Length: 491
Image (cartoon, rainbow, N blue to C red; front, side, top):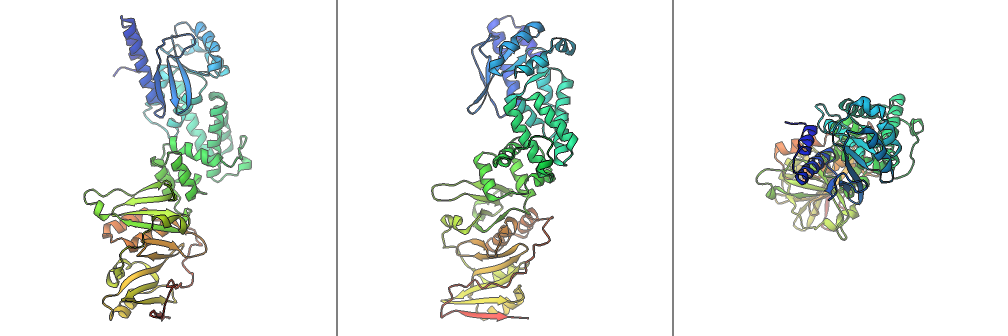
């Protein structure tokens, strides 16, 4: 396949001037669209005009003009760059000049002074299709398209810049001062003020995420409250890595409100959002969860486990969601935020079925109903064994389970079958992974394979040592009436 430069050259040689112009602009527009897929490229009716751009890059309300320029007369090109100073444009050279000639005519210096980004077919194609792309390549292309400056002319320069930025981010993630300082200097050289400030914030977020102290950051730290959220949005948009160590580093303070903010910034559908949540299950906490049984909807190909955010609608607050085979979980910070979703008409389940579902769970208390009576079973040891439950309820063949409290490593969870909900009942919030696993495990009739799949997905390898289920047994039958009975068993 012909290179981008060859295709541009072939189009320039078309004998029909209008057809030549059309072909050149379409080839360049396609190349820029591939260079930064987040941009919309709008072609104008001008061609090689002095002040009117040939096309415009658009990101919502943000625009950057693009001028196509011939590069056979470099002194004239240098003077033209200086005339375009007020527009801070991207200048796309239609051919790649020799590097010596570009240096002799100070194209890099003149472009940088004018906040103009001068590039060529060779550099654009190299950055768009590197044989061994790095995690920061897409971020680099977006940043150059938005606010790059200076001249990036030949393949070697493009490769050097991409590798240097990736090395700088790696240095920031490990708190390495010299490498991070070099990355910040590189950003200052190659990006105009606004884009440089954004990238500096991102480098700072990576620095802090790696555990390094803010007061030791080798640049000018931005202490504004919104820095972490803005930087996190940008990282989710443009950081291409599945390295959970990286995502864990930048997500140590992750919470549900922040995940909702990311969804509102339209980055929750990115694969990086999945990596961020999965890497931080050991710190992400919540109080309430509702689980829908989706088995009737998953008759063909069940969906893969995937996080998302259900944004607020009217009086329904937002929630983190997890969709998987046979279920969908909605997680909120407090029980009140879950209430608009709850319709207390869920089915209770027979005690034998409950016993099967809790074969690997630590059940602290159990609420069963027979006719109008309620029986609460509790165990002072903190774990109601299945043989005890079966023995006590053997004479009650029609007993249905209304509620159950199960112990998890990060706190106890009361599962309400009528509400199809699970609520943390300890002083601190429960880890989201524990909350979902406990609630879905009791409410959904999973197959063995589905249960194992969910347990593996929500597994927490780096669980804090302080996470122990040693709270006292809780009695959740709060509205016991005269018809209620209670059976206690102590060891």
